[in-house]
Image (cartoon, rainbow, N blue to C red):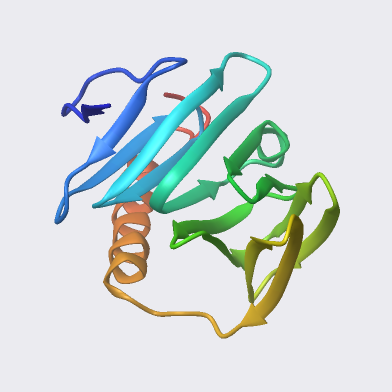
Length: 170
């Protein structure tokens, strides 16, 4: 693992580790990935066809403003794969053996060796493994400092992007 470096390009097979109290924003085409402190993320695949990220622990928020890019993304955790089905705003957390997914806007599919599940707008679902089986349960959506930062950051970025170029330009 290596600490994330400011303004460095991210490439396939990179492994990022953010220290506590830090945050990072990664632009991938029109998509924006925001990471909270104490997050470890691995870039499994990054090419013209797909983006596969593995969240080992921590918190990641993904903003997908374009429908075309939504189906190109996949976030993998120990519990399974999370695949956006629509453009939207998503959050995936991994902590204490549980993957927690929140769909602020859009629709996301979950897939594991023994289970599939859809998570829709306004839902939060926790996924975990127990006795070799995947379990999941709905929970109330959290509002924390990371969520507040994501919302404020998206608002600021949206205002700047609208004044300059199309969101498809990077």
